[in-house]
Amino acid sequence: MNQPPPDPHWRAHAQGRPYPGRRGPTEPSESVPGPKERLYPLASWRARALARVIDAVVVALPVLLVALVLALVWLGARNLFGGSGDGVRSYGYFLAVTFFVLYTGYEAFALARWQQTLGKRMTGVRVAPVAGAGRLGAVPTAALLVRAAIFGLPVLLSALPGGPLWIVVAVVAVLTAGMAAWDRPNRQGIHDKIAGTVVLDVS
Image 1 (tube, rainbow, N blue to C red):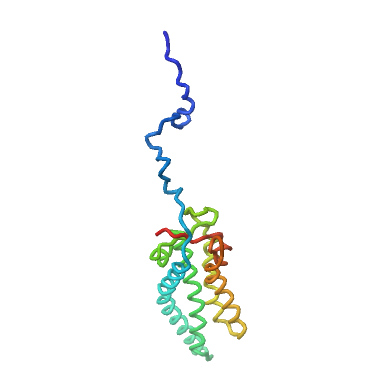
Image 2 (cartoon, rainbow, N blue to C red):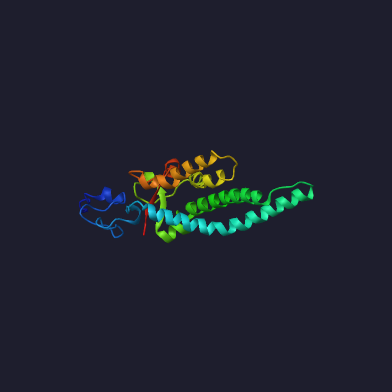
């Protein structure tokens, strides 16, 4: 019994590849890149700064309330055991520590879950790995924690006593917030460089 000659492209078909000159039914068009292949431009410094302001406002209210409760508990405990303390100074310490902890946790969790905080969502920017070269992707949680902690470090340092410390606070603030304005080619602050991240405009 005569059999038809074998298809010369059977091997490609068996391996799940389309025949040469044909397009598979689920193969996307070559002229339209898929969502994973889309490249996004770097976010502007203004959009990043506005996102930070929004996030700071979002975190500020719970920080004020939690710090107030902690300061009152601390002063009450000291008075109960015969001690004394400066209520304003104690509130300042708790305010700085509480902001650092809550802001770091808020930003790290939001970026690990959605690659965006509320402020970044409202301004249309998203954090991505610098190795993605303009593509979106997940960033390790440990790197996001370090990234958020570095950005909140000036607030934590501001609670410590000492005049020269304000110079350190200013330097850290410039390296984290201001550096992204002049850094090239990736517009990274020091927190971005350490975490290996960039901020992309996805609006």
